[in-house]
Image 1 (cartoon, rainbow, N blue to C red):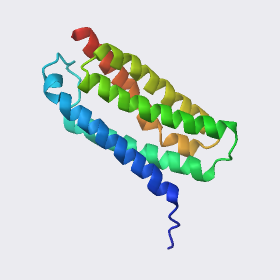
Image 2 (cartoon, rainbow, N blue to C red):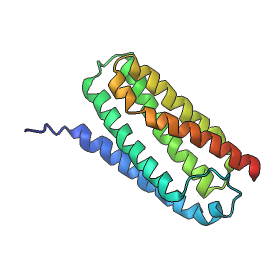
Image 3 (tube, one colour):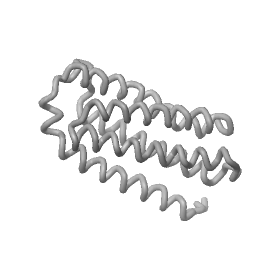
Image 4 (cartoon, rainbow, N blue to C red):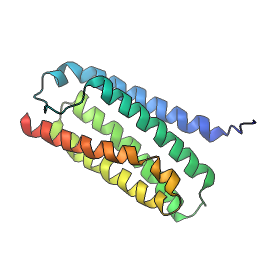
Amino acid sequence: MQVDIKINYIVFTSITLVLSFIGKFFSDFGMQWYYGLQLPSYTPPAWFISVMWTLIYVLATIAVIKVWNSFERDKDFYMIMALFGVNALSNLLWTYLFFYRHNICLAFADSLVVFASILALVIMIGNVSYRIAGLLVPYLFWITFAVWLNLMIWVQN
């Protein structure tokens, strides 16, 4: 079986890795502060959160590669690619605001941007490919929970 490696596989995977390493830096910086917060009883353990984000990053990277490789270069394609960028940057901004700046309120506001961008991605990609959109559904469910969790942490602290 021959695998056709395209440059975008490396580019998008590299972007994901760089963003995840920067996010890990911000997270690690604020973990002591985080464990001092009043957290809801249903807050998942750190290991589970790490597993979920790893899965989400892998699936989102596959989705963006599939969109890049198979979608027609029309205005919707460029909007989808812009939304991927907005989502990635707002996701990273959330980590910075929450863990590095300890600003739960602004992090919550940013989490709404993350939610809106992933919802828009699922809808827009779903108009062309349910399979590719399906790769982002776990992210949509997780970020819905994360927005709620962020709100409850803000309320309790």
